[in-house]
Length: 117
Image (cartoon, rainbow, N blue to C red; front, side):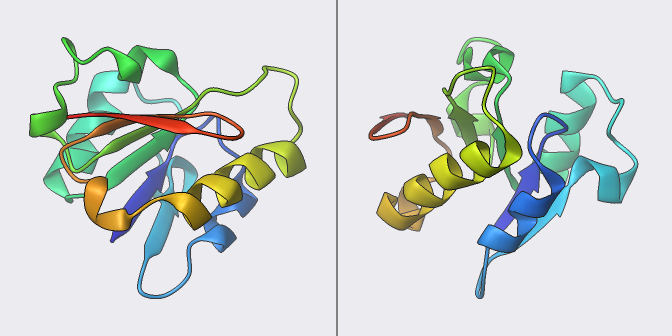
């Protein structure tokens, strides 16, 4: 499965995705200053699940789950460091069934997550 890390995610979080998964960061694609619609368009075109802290992507009216390869929104405190963010993401990745990500919007918190289809 492919993942795209938004600009509000640490670049080093790419290392959390091992085989058979692959992760890109928006910096790798020169999209670090892109608008939300441009980022989601790239993700759709490349069948890539988006990983972000931007709650705009949690709006299923603007970003319907059925239209995407998956959107994962981390709901964590704004003051989290890169290490904290990576810890929260790693905890989520350990728990999630990857087959439930496509065509879903997932709100992931420290200890739980909710899946919207």
